[in-house]
Amino acid sequence: MIVLGIDLGETTGYAFIRDIKMITESPLLRYGTVALGADLPGGFRPDVVVVERPAYVPGRAQEGYDRALAAYGYRWYKKLHVIRAVDWMQTHKHYPLPGRGVLATQHEKDAYRMAMWAMHKYGGGSGKEE
Image (cartoon, rainbow, N blue to C red; front, side):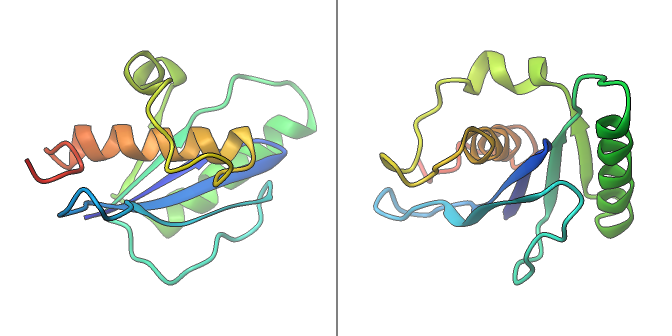
């Protein structure tokens, strides 16, 4: 199973993760930061896509968020789950990151943690084989 976590913002963080079979493997496939509304890199076909619904911000920023959500909804129809911060933060706010300094921005870190939350919620597993 592959999960894509997207944290919208003026710079949008994303993280592709996979279900791992051994503890020595890293679940992180690809990550990065792009400008709001820019295309995310391809190469993976996620089974689940989670996007945190941004808080309402009046003006141009809200229009950018709305356009980005519409584009993601079109691209990943039936795979997209728009979530709120309260959905994932209570259990995964301090979820361990893949390594010190690997994920440079807060958007990347939050995207990774959202993806891990979605792996646990929609994947039916812990992300690791027990």
